[in-house]
Length: 462
Image 1: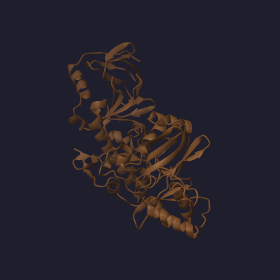
Image 2: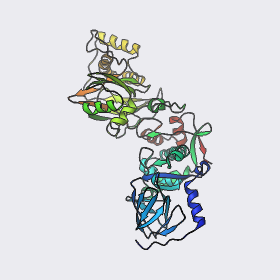
Image 3: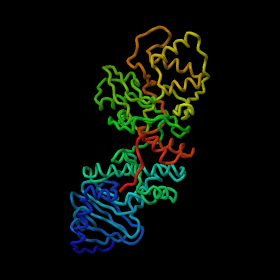
Image 4: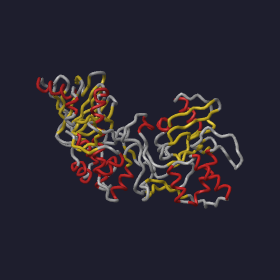
């Protein structure tokens, strides 16, 4: 690195302080603070020219085309020179960090680490290719741009004062990979919706999204325990099949016992797992874990995050395996899931048919399952066995009922439990694969959003 030139500038000092101490009004000026790292040591570069740096005291430094910045407490060391945080870094070209290039500026603070500070529209340029991609239909990209803009602006208003940043660059918020992933098509989708957000009443709507709902989206109240009128769960209305339409996860009983214990359930060795409550779309809401020294009921979404959300891709569990496809029912406009197992179905006898009818009257099956059964009569024997399990029976003779009256038991295999499921993500809000299917069928972005967030409106952000 070349020599560092430093001089005082009161105007620059005031400017640097203002950049850090933004009011809520300034947050509405559409600058987004994205947390990239908090490692304490940062290797920064620039694609063209030199890096210009300003510290909290207004000291300016020319850092050549690269710099290694080590942070300790409220100061930073650069080639033996000490500067007071925060530091603001800009360049003639795009800034570089950790193998990626970025628009805007970098800000290094004691509280939040390395941040990328840039206009919200430029931020979205780096979100859309990472979340969906240029191969998706234009209207799906436009819908994604509107909800991603809404999400980050709402976060900016609600959490910056507390955290010192708006979002992280991973799927903990929404994936952002900087300037290097931009495409003309995704940038065009951002530009065509510039300033547009989703609102409910006079507020920016909370717009979570996920990869694949598995046939029916979830209620926010069931997943995060806060009710929103526009996030109560809706069925998919267009047929599609995604790479995660079906999945299987094997998780050891020991790992599950450890997770349950951390969540307050010290129940010994796990002997059984019951899906003890499901929502209107068949998604697990609560799970009951039975152990050698008791039982514990836990919210399904909480368990999924604690055990491994990459393996347990969703809480849309199914009693058995098979291939799945979200299939729309034109007469009801409801989404349902069709399972095509290779095992041939056997016909039910009269007594079993009567038993199945009784289970249906008792509410043993979800709405999605009933539609599936009616449209696929060859599956009646599968649902008959599922119904017997839910009623706590292994044959037609009565036995002691299990605690789960409308769920089912997760399969046990040796020292593991085997989870079958469909879809990927928390299930709340827009389903990206469902959105893509709707766009391919001619739905406009605004209509797609009205389906997944009913009661909301698309408005210009000011």
